[in-house]
Amino acid sequence: GLVWTPNAAGTLSGTVTLEDSTGTTLLALPVTGSSAALDATNSVDAAAYGVKGDGVTDDTVALQAAANAAGSAGKVLLIPQPPGGAHYKLTGYVAVYGSVVGVGTPRPELRMYGATGADIAAGQLGPGPQTVLYYKGNTSGTVITGLHLNGGAPNPPTVNPYNTPVEHSTGLELQSVSNVFVENNLIENT
Image 1 (cartoon, one colour):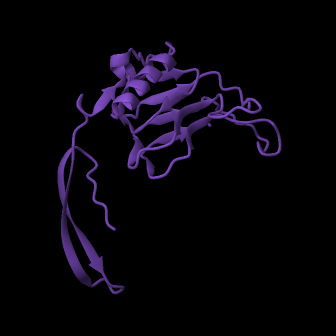
Image 2 (cartoon, rainbow, N blue to C red):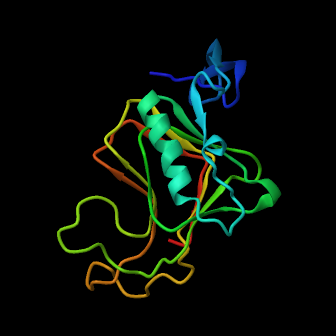
């Protein structure tokens, strides 16, 4: 099937053209799609939960509270660009329960501090200690988009982590999911 999804709020129209191998148009099909703006009716803004995004304050607890509220309400977690172009400081993973949308230019940055390269503890279930966002289970059609996920490990281990106990930070860890769209994100230093 063909899916037509506008990349901004509102209605977007266009044409899907089917051509044969010589470039001759066989069919020109007009398409129209619409998308709702993110607002208080369908999203939870992390700013309302006290995230600072100043690159100094640890935003882990506040961002987790926003993610919990979005998950409980079945809404999108909206992460705005921090004021002044700084970033959100995290010292532990944030569990998310549905769609997460970063808004602003450049993308809002979630940066992990204290990435040590330590592996998860023996027998530990769930995310490793340096995971930025963790998502387990899913809602069909979940989207994670518009974020800058910085693992905080600019020099990852040079050894193969599968042959040694040394691990690395993870920008996004997905577990037991399907139909999750991860698009338009920058993931680095993992």
